[in-house]
Length: 347
Ligand code: NAP
Ligand code: ZN
Ligand code: ZN
Image: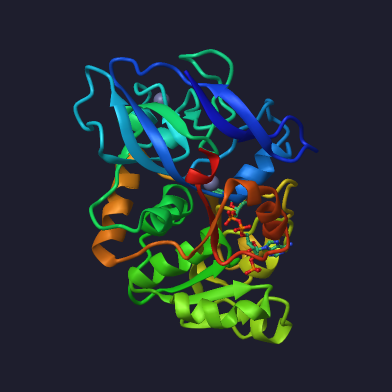
C-alpha cells in the first residue's frame, strides 16, 4: 500500500509531497494512522545530510502518535482503534547483550531507525512519520496512556525519552545541582524532568528572551551563557549537566562548571566535532559522556511517568505545509518548544 508523505530529495531540497510504499501488516505488525508527528532537530540534520549518511528520498519524523488501523493475526498488545506511539526505532536484532538488557538503542547490530535505516522487511530504506501511516512490529510500538493530550505527547517519543533516560541513568534527584544547556525541544523536556526528579535546576540559554519561559518550565535559575560573570559564579558547582545544543558551542565552558566527579552528558548531535581541553577533564576528575534516546521498556516507563505527573511538551501545532518554514525557525532558535505536525493536513 502507499502512504502520503513529505520528503527531501536531496540535502539542498525543501520538503515536498511524495507517495511512499508501506508493507501490508505481517503477523506481528501494527498499522498506525498517524495523527501527530513532532519535529526534532535530528530530522533537519538528517534531511540536510549533516551527518553524511543520508539516503534519499528522506522522509523524517520519529515522534509519532496515532491510532491503530489494522493488526496482524499474531498481535497481542493492540487492536484497531487503540492509540499507539512510535519513537526513533522500529526494530533491532533482539538477541545481542544490549537488546536483551532492554537497551535496544545500543543494539550491537544497530537498531533499525524509524527513518534512514535499511528496511529489512520491504527493501530500500525506512521512511519516518511525516506521513499518513506507518507499519511497525508491535514490539516497538508504545502504549499511549489514557487522558494525555495527544499532540503534546508526540515529542515525548524522542525529546522526552532522550532527556529522561540520562537523567535516570545518572540518578539525578534531590540535593543535586543539575544544569540543562539549550532551551529547545530536548532542553525544555530536560528542565521539566530534572525538576520533577527533585533536583535544583539551572537552565543555560543563549537567548535572553527565553528567561521567563525557562523559569515557568521549571528551572530554579536561568543563566544567559554569553554572560561571562554569570557563568563564573557557577564554577565547579554542578553534579550533572545535560547538553542538548544542536550546533557548535564551547564544551569547556560547561566542563568548567562541574564539581569533583561531576558528569557532562551530551545528547545534542552537532554536525562537527567539539574540542575539549584535557585539563578541564583532569581537574577535578570530571566525566564527559553521551547518551542516545532510551530502550523500549524505558520509553513506556517515561510515557507512564508523564501521564502520572501531567507532563507534556509545550508545542506549536503546524500543518505539514508549514514544515519548511518551521525548520528555518529551528535554525534561528525560534521554537517554543516543539513544533508538532497535525497530520490531518496531509490527508
Ligand atoms: P532544537 O529544538 O533546535 O534546540 C536546540 C537548542 O540549542 C536551541 O533552541 C538553542 O537553545 C540551542 N542552540 C542552537 N544553536 C546554538 C548555538 N549556535 N550555540 C549555542 N546554543 C545553540 O533541537 P532539539 O530537537 O532539541 O535537538 C537538539 C540536539 O539533540 C540536536 O543536535 C539533535 O539532533 C540532538 N538529538 C539527539 C538525540 C540523542 O539520542 N542523543 C535525540 C534527539 C535529538 P537556546 O536558544 O536556549 O540557547
Ligand atoms: Zn529526535
Ligand atoms: Zn541487538
